[in-house]
Image (cartoon, rainbow, N blue to C red; front, side):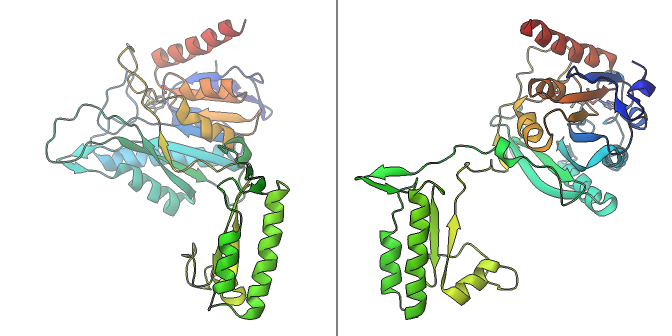
Length: 353
Ligand SMILES: C[S@@+](CC[C@H](N)C(=O)[O-])C[C@H]1O[C@@H](n2cnc3c(N)ncnc32)[C@H](O)[C@@H]1O
């Protein structure tokens, strides 16, 4: 497809869920994509100095600084094409040179924040659970990579409900309704009554509020809670009243509540995902697992929105976008990899028939 034809009058030409794949250098292709048009970008550029991809491209620079500068040119373009509420998820690995880790992921992240104005929301650790073969005997095995979640603005799209896990419900114990972890309030009530750090008035208010929270558990409004009472529980906040509203509440009222969400917890920033089994692949050795793209797409690309991967390789991001009903664009410098990506999608379409 002619890259100048991706957008006509600012509307996405491939208005179906079938990904649009484009072959060429991502910087020049990105320059044809209008500003503020992409909802979510997920990508995994080549490692510096480790691989010799077909058709060259980024990663072959003779020193890490040139590599970082080239990546930053791409991230600058990505910032332009992303919508104001958009997100950018960057998976990037490090490289050793003369025995020293080059700290490439963090050098890039810091420059993106300082020079390009990105806001870093998470530094996710992708725990690969097993590492590549490593013959060194004077350092630990490396089994993780970084995935940075960047946004352009504080007010960005984030569908937390789409990724919450293990929703909790209240349970019945000995005929009484208690919270999902078995909290029924008896221990808190005793601590309040025995407290020497609460005034009589504070004790009265604490018991009243505890009863109200227990009632909310009973009617199923909240699945669980914890109560922090002055000089009893270890506080979960900063002690400084300037930085923590909770510290202020504890000082003024003598207690506060942590109310749990009925919808389950958000995933943590450590993701245990086995790498793709690359042994069977003939022409592309750096495919990332589909699971790596699921949380980013579900949380930060609205249904029907557009996902972009400017180093799409065999099109994993696009395949997951397609599965999750998002449109997508994949760019790669190698025609061979784009052919593989296209075949993957055609295979899925066949499976649907
Ligand atoms: C780590 S691989 C991406 C793998 C991909 N996530 C997948 O699951 O298959 C990086 C890709 O970046 C491509 N690449 C390198 N430099 C490029 C450039 N300047 N423009 C477009 N693609 C480039 C390589 O051809 C390679 O396929």
